[in-house]
Amino acid sequence: MQTNSKVQSLKAFLGQAGRAALVEVAATKGSTPRETGAFMLVSSSAIFGTIGGGQLEFMAIDKARQMLFSSLEGEMAAKRPEGVLSEGKRVPSTAPVTQPGGSAATLPWRGREARIEVDETCATLDVPLGPEIGQCCGGRVEVLIRLVDAKIEQELVAKAEAEEAHLPHVYVFGGGHVGQALAASLGLLPIRVEVIETRADALEGMPETVETRLTPMPEAVVREARAGSAFVILTHDHALDFLIVAEALKRDDAAYVGMIGSKTKKATFKNWFLKSDEGSEAQFNRLVSPIGCNTVKDKRPPVIAALAAAEIMTALVSHAAQASAAPEKAMAG
Image 1 (cartoon, rainbow, N blue to C red):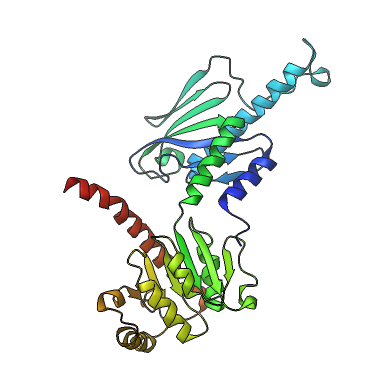
Image 2 (spheres, rainbow, N blue to C red):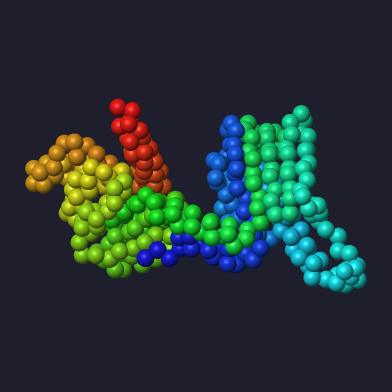
């Protein structure tokens, strides 16, 4: 069972952060590190997510923390009696005090400008991504920074839950050395991963970011999987591999079907699949085996896992693009 999803991590951050600011890519022009809608959360001592890193992100984090500091100072000042300063003296602010109604500042950088607009709870950074700030993307990004309130928090959690519900599924059959390594690699990606095993001990030590399932009939999992799923077969038993692969190849809506093994194993499966399981050449041709491409001749589990993870993610993205384009083609036709 999955114990550490993005939604859980988001809720944990919001629960521990206290005050936080939402930093969101509001608009982009040209080449940029992240797309519109990408976001991160910033607290006084931690961050969650990313808007692409580099100087742009450093600037956004700095501005977000200035806003958090100013907000805290404002609340503390409101609680003090009029004319009484903290401990009898004014505490210097490291952040500029913004007057009600907002203000705007334009910072020139060698002929180009980065514009900053600020009010009490919101700021907008309009930044050119050029050598002036130590980046050479060439585009321009507008970043919106808002202090997180109850409404924004609810919207973030609801959006994360909706995205998580529609994540593509990857089923890893087998929790051996490669299965463990593959689970760790896939667990870093924006997908839902489930490792299926017939042996309880093989599921021990799986990453918290993946789900696990113990079952005596792993091939049955293939039948109940939703459309667009990926199936990676690498169990300890070749006969079991064949049963699972055969079920997966019968799913015309699968994004990926891969089986670990040699060319000889693939040829043996083909002979059995076409003669004994009534499979077709078209179905067999969809099988990826060996997994992780053949360009790197390295059989160490972490290497196979890294190559296979990239291969699987590519297949998922390609399948999703084709699926979304299908209705448009049908309407155009």
